[in-house]
Picture 1 (tube, rainbow, N blue to C red):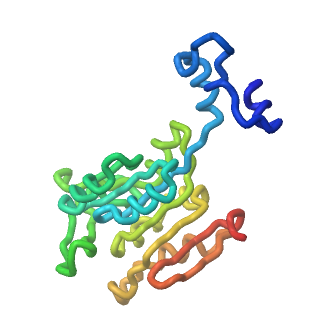
Picture 2: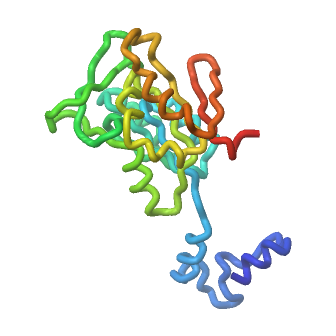
Length: 219
């Protein structure tokens, strides 16, 4: 507490972790560690549809203090993703994002490694489906706070925003690629648009990406 007051008063440096002078305790004092952790928060980024990790690496380099959860269903893409983020604060999860838990199979659309889709199935041999709510609940047990969700899930937004969207209000920045162009007359963007229409968020279109930014972050 004294050290925090010194910092607020303009002190350029204090003893490591507030260790009493000459004590030699430093990081060996578990009480100091506990107190400091209570005041430290780390932004959480969810990369849904991480592919081989290009976005995860970008976020990891630009925001190296953040925790990133990268989700990718295709096994070959996932293997490359794991290699690309080695040494970074990225947790990789092989699975699909949805509004409910379950399992999904991976569909090869024939358009390349970037266009794999998923479809819910009853078979437990397929990849698991995870919700953003679940990720927030799990990661929220630490010192992380929701900051950004990037989503490029090849039409899976239809079954991600159809229900259980409490996580949207907790997410300051949402970056999503919609896929009506790829799936005409299937209404894949409808659930997303209905979800955010009544919320206090800016809606910004930049190329193929849509940015949904909570008002309290907008300039």
